[in-house]
Length: 187
Image 1 (cartoon, rainbow, N blue to C red):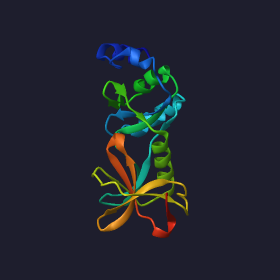
Image 2 (tube, helix red, strand yellow):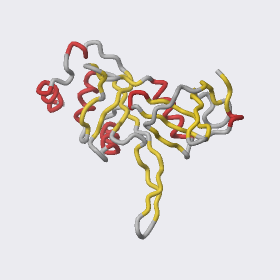
Image 3 (tube, one colour):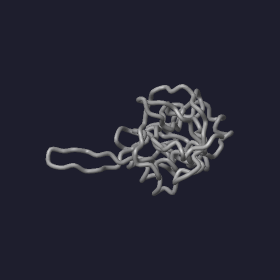
């Protein structure tokens, strides 16, 4: 914690300490060193700080075998739930953490609904695609049947197929899911 405070004062994180007096608990994003997401997530859990690392299974092929491995859905990002200013400094002090994602001078807060949607989708859907492409706003729908019942999403067309879109604006990424039309209802 002392190291994080020294770094914060030296580098100016947060840029204006008075902004942190208006601290609001909620979900935030930590940017990590490459391939350190799982280490940061584990370390945060050891410090009893709530964090979320969305994973997806990918088939990796080596010259002698094939194996499904868990890879981060958003490479170099870990979601962290901050309850206090102390959690802020402990989170950035975790081995492998680089900085909090910012919007201007403020650390950017992620809406609870976005995190809940990502949790719901990653826990139930196996065929998941992440895209950084821009999609025109689509028809807003709610899933009415199946494991994703209640998820609010958009229907868009991608690669000549209709897919569901869950936007993660802060990361400028989108989650694309293929689902049957009868599982959807209008808002």
